[in-house]
Image (cartoon, rainbow, N blue to C red):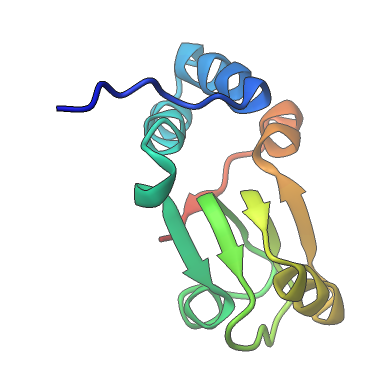
Length: 114
């Protein structure tokens, strides 16, 4: 059996440590999801985000946002990674794409999608 070594990305390791120390359960959950192997992390299409959100919301994707689908309303989306097409479509919808660290530093709490 292969021994799991965890992420080799230093920024991700630091983010996971920071989030897991927070007392709020949502940040502990995001840290737990980010700590999964890369192949098991969430990948969420814009279509799914569009179908499950309302205008003006802030959401968290503990993984990668993919550009399949369309975004019809303004959102703030915090994620570990974004595809190039997702970034372009979020910008076209007048939304914001930020990192999870940026959202955490602002002390705003979003809703987890995925």
